Length: 58
Image (cartoon, rainbow, N blue to C red; front, top):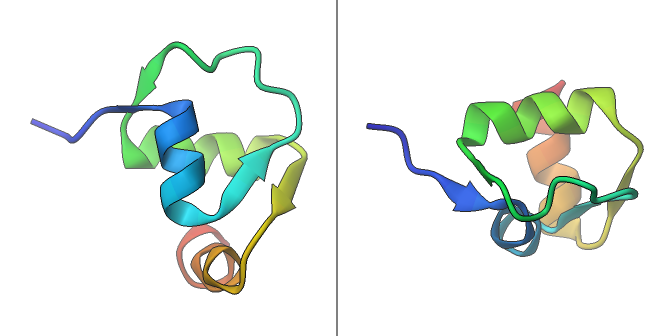
């Protein structure tokens, strides 16, 4: 089974924040989190987040 976490946990772990968090209480897999990053306006908080976005999401 896929590892599910709340949106806030994914954001803090990856260093990327979604601009509008209307779904923050739902649990997502990493694949669902990547899809949210592709479709929404994001704020990259750390260099780790930038590397994650460049390598994993695009």
